Length: 227
Image (tube, rainbow, N blue to C red; front, side, top):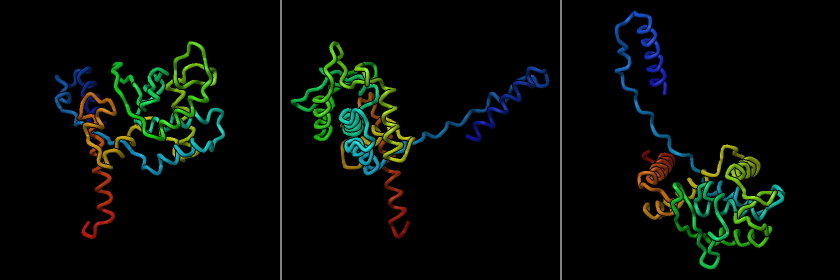
């Protein structure tokens, strides 16, 4: 990043000199800016993710809608949903008998996502407690009985992340990263993870391979006698 900033400063200087007539051409524009290295997403450990999910399940913060909050975290971590996908779920998208969700991802592209046992159980418990609101198809409701927005979900996640997980930097997408990385670490096929996440390109999913390799090297460096 330092090199990129210095190049920008040099270009600015030569642009000024060109404007003042000191130099005939801005030669600094010919210098190519080096590409910034792609930053790997920081991933929670399974213990960190479960601590927050269990905190919601145990109603540690004594929130007014504990069943809803628990279902939110179980679906974020158990199904790897984007926050917009979670907020956009309608009652008709839930196959309670078979344990599937119909999810609308980017570009309104639909996919089927399986619910693991804990997520299905948490959602079933919430739906049993969910107020019946006429003409409101949303699965997750706010305190006024309307659809809980993506921003509302972010606020809930930040609250639990701060006071239960002790890390206010955690956001809904952190659970999606954890979902994919932990699946991969436990031997799931990369293309299967691609389908579960709704990625159009496998290259998008492959970043989780890099994360896993980084974790693996950290373990090697710590544990191997020849490291």
